[in-house]
Image 1 (cartoon, rainbow, N blue to C red):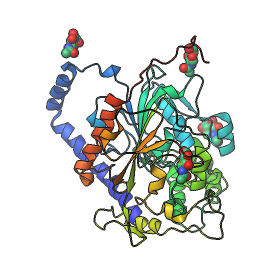
Image 2 (spheres, protein in one colour; image 1 turned 30 degrees about the vertical axis):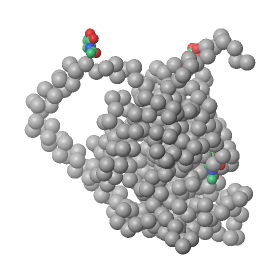
Image 3 (cartoon, rainbow, N blue to C red; image 1 turned 90 degrees about the horizontal axis):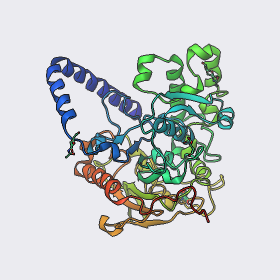
Image 4 (tube, helix red, strand yellow; image 1 turned 180 degrees about the vertical axis):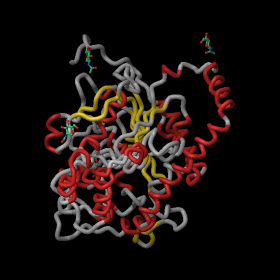
Length: 433
Ligand SMILES: *[C@@H]1O[C@H](CO)[C@@H](O)[C@H](O)[C@H]1NC(C)=O
Ligand SMILES: *[C@@H]1O[C@H](CO)[C@@H](O)[C@H](O)[C@H]1NC(C)=O
Ligand SMILES: *[C@@H]1O[C@H](CO)[C@@H](O)[C@H](O)[C@H]1NC(C)=O
Ligand SMILES: *[C@@H]1O[C@H](CO)[C@@H](O)[C@H](O)[C@H]1NC(C)=O
C-alpha cells in the first residue's frame, strides 16, 4: 500500500507540476522569450569543451523527459553547465541499461547483442538515438559518470564495443551504489536459493503483474510519461494479443521469465555474477557515498531514528537490520555473515555501497574529511559513509536540506577540478609494452 501510494503521489505531483508549467507558459509567454534571448547572448565559457557529467538513475528512476518537469536528481543537474540525465529503463537489467546508455551518448540504434537477446527472448535492436548526446565521446573526450543506486553498477557494466576502452571514462561517482547486491531483494520476493526466481506470494509478484499489464495495455501518453523500459520485449497487446499476455502472466515469456530485469541483478548472487567481469581501472577516478540509517545499541542493529527515515523505507530499514539468511539454503558466498549486512539505508546494505567487494575486493580508501583525499588518485574507490536513507538525495531536495547542496557541489567540483588525465593517453603507434 505504502509503495503504491508513494508511486501515485509522485505521479500526480509530476502531472500537477506540468499543468502549472503549461499554464505559466501560456500566460507569461512574452517574458519567456525575453529570458531566452538573454540566455543566448550571454557568453558561456566554452561549455562545449567541458566533459559532460552524466547522472544515471536507479531502480524505478527516470531521466530527463519522463514524468514531465520532475527531476530524479532533485534538480542537481542545474548545478553545472554540462550535465546529461539519460532515461534508461526503470526496471530493465543492468546489462540492457548499460547498452542503452552507450547509444544514448554515442548515437545510433541500441544493439543489445545477438547472443544476449536470443538468450533473454527480446529483440536485438531497440530505440534509435538519431543524434547522440555526446557523439564525440572517446578516449580524448572522456566523461564523468554519477550513478545512484543501480545506476552506479550500470556505468561500470558496459563490456566494450569496437574501440572503446576504460579511458573513455574519467571518473565514476556512486551515490548509494548497488555494487554488491542487497538483502532487500529477498525481503521483497527473490528466492535466496538462486537469487533469480520469485517467491510465489510477494511484493515483487504484484509488481510483476502490474508491469506486464501496464506494458500490455500500452497506453501511449502514459508510456511516454513513464516507461519501465521493456519495449524491446514486445509486450504490447497489439503485438502479442491475449494469449501472449496469458503466457507472460504464467511466467513463460517476458523479462520476468528470462530473468533479464533489474531485481536478479540486485541479489547477492546476481552481483557476484556481474562483478566477476567488472573491473576497477587504474586510470579512472572513483568516489562513492554509502548511506546508512541504522546504528548499533548493545550489539543490536536498529533504525537510527524515526522521523529522519522516509516512510517508504522505515519498515525496510528495520527488516533489513534483522535479516537472516535462511539456514537451509547455501550462503551466497564463502564467508558470508548476516551481521555484515545489517547496516542499511532501507534499500541497500551499507557494505554493498562502499566499493565492489565480491567476489574479489577492489582497492578502496575510507574518507573522513574531503581534504584527506587530495590529490585524488585514480584506480581507488574513495568512500564516505553518510547518515541518510536511500532516497535522501533524489526526487525531493528539501528533505536533505543543506546536505543536498554539500554532496552535489562536492561531486561536481571533484569532477571539474580534481579528476583529470595527468598524462596524455598513449597514441596507437606508441609502444604497448
Ligand atoms: C564572448 O563571445 C565572443 C564571441 O562569441 C568572443 O569574441 C569573446 O571573447 C567572448 N568573451 C568571453 C569572456 O568569453
Ligand atoms: C518485436 O517486434 C518487432 C517488430 O514489431 C520484431 O521485429 C521483433 O523481432 C519482435 N521481437 C520479439 C522478441 O518478438
Ligand atoms: C574505431 O577506430 C577507427 C580508427 O580509429 C575508426 O575509423 C572507427 O570509426 C572507430 N569505431 C568506432 C565505433 O568508434
Ligand atoms: C562487491 O563487489 C566487488 C566487485 O565489484 C567485489 O570485489 C567485492 O568483493 C564485493 N563485496 C561483497 C561484500 O560482496
